[in-house]
Image (cartoon, rainbow, N blue to C red; front, side):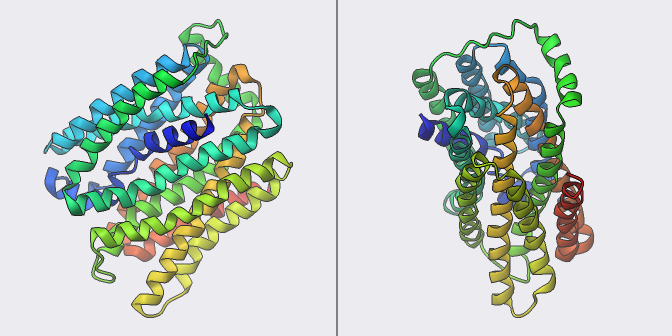
Length: 379
């Protein structure tokens, strides 16, 4: 079941990132202004944030398996719409809807935590989140390779069919889970503000991850533009290979989960935030020939992904240690708050690249983990 949960979350969340390395061809095909290209990623993340706030809390109210099934079919329909439209406005609407439906992944994660034993919950969550992070990281190279072989439309068609198939597989394999909150929907939403006010660990962990995910989104939104530009002149296949190497960062997830189970969350956090800052400092201060700078960017992608994944798992381990009856709402709040950081990072990255080039992007990226370290210093 852990393998099923991990695979499912990876496949679902990958839908949020297929467009990230295809911003150039999608913008040209739909007539989207280059300065607004970051909206392709930003609107997907905004849809995801809203889904986390208004759909994921239903995991504490409605039967979970049915909720996952409906969300995945919605995502499949939105992916098909994105694949066939040539209108910028319709593509952006489809992107928003893809984000909205992909919150099914964050109904699956608390499901896995609910089924695991308390003493191994961190390891279970770490393994499931490894699958989720593998989905995020593999989405970019897979999308680039498919776009090179066929077209950018093809990845959305393939994913639409895969997501629909996954919906039926999960409906067949997952047990039913009927939460016992006894609340109506609006009372459930109202309780989320109270949970945010009365749960300091939630606020702190969300702040750390919002900064880290902002840096992550900024980097991956802009790095493909830099790699295909005049300095490196890589093809989409070259970008795919670059992104594939970054997958190595996912190894930090199960390690961080195991350390969190051992009570080492504080040192986990310090290491993760430091890795985030180091990732942006390297390309800012290490310069040389084209090959050296490309190698530094590869190392940056690995180090940044390690920091983000370790911090994410440590935060979710802390959240899932809280009572089971509020777990979906806490997870929804946690993910929504840090995805707002991601939306800020991707939109800021597109603007910084257009206005100040790659160096401006790196300085903006460095500001995110440094802000998190300042917050961490008050813990």
